[in-house]
Image 1: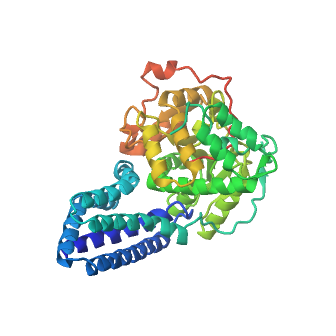
Image 2: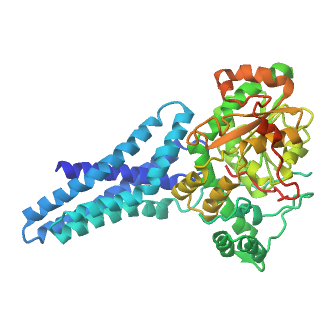
Image 3: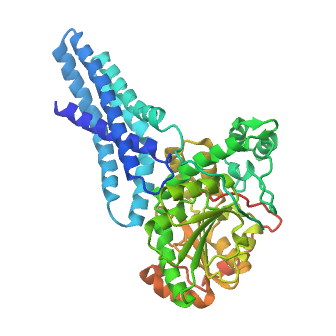
Length: 183
Length: 335
């Protein structure tokens, strides 16, 4: 149960960050704390939906299993293998995010260039590598399939949030610019 | 990454064109724009241009502007992440303090050249840090950008303004000129000319940020533009601009050639700082009589200025870029 709980918490955190990333670059205001808070909430909401889909699939897989207890044990072991990788990645990202609280702009910039940007780039690979790890030691192909389903629903969150709420840059209605200073 | 040469233009340089005298926008033929990149061996850029909507033979200016607005929205996000507002403020505050002490109550006009969506000017206005005697103004050739920058400032009740036009033709010249991500658009002899134009009555200083070219810059730019950008044009031009960014010596030589009345200073020169800390770095020009006061006003940060005059003979002996190469710099800043 601890394994499942930790994975769910990570999925919620990842969903929130996916919401933030999707919204970033699509609002040109200077002050946008509420905009980002809404985006994070939407990402968490999308992660809850994703976890619901995954929970339903796991429930069905357990109900139809010839030996539900054995499949459950296999699922827990697969989750623990996923955690090996995901805990490391989450620790690095959350540490960098915590570092953003340091009130020095150069530290913030350094954390972005060294950790947060590259971590965003490798996130899909990390998620898929977790699914591979989970599948490698699984005795039951259904468990490996569920690990891949988990990876796919997490990867889909950013896409879904973008499609639903953040398709384009938001700008206020503008009057045509008048007045030209020629050469 | 698909950018074959250091001087392959950026897409945003090619898909918009303005009459240099009237600033009226000129039509751009899509095939001609595509050919610029195809001929340079930049097939990716050629594909991006070929996909832009056209009206007849020419690119649809509304579609081009929509693309550029999306790209600039994403670029603003990078500016936010790399703390560009606080970086500019950290240099402007001491500069303004020095100028204010000699200005006898006259307004201090800070003008952002090629301001795009005006993020830096709006950020400075939102910070409220510069004082009531500071006038914040953004200039850009692109009417769509200026209209949106104006609307964004109004939406947040920010005390700043934006105009379409040439920043060097203002009725009241800037006290301080700024730019971010603009310098590398000025190729060849147009770079010292850009600095020469800033030697105007009343102008006391300029601060121009651009990408700091190091060995890590192209790969770093690629990582960030893949991770943070969605607009193909933004991804392409972000990496292209990193490859086109000028090194320290070229910038110092250009200021000394074009604007000898200003002392040329680099803050966080690429040779002095880790490339991880040094994503963007400014070339600063300060009227020579103000330099000592500026250094004092900077306090401990003054250690991060290059020596002035330069002690490295290479910085003095460095030749200027090929004066025959002139790409018309009619673009908006891209950071």
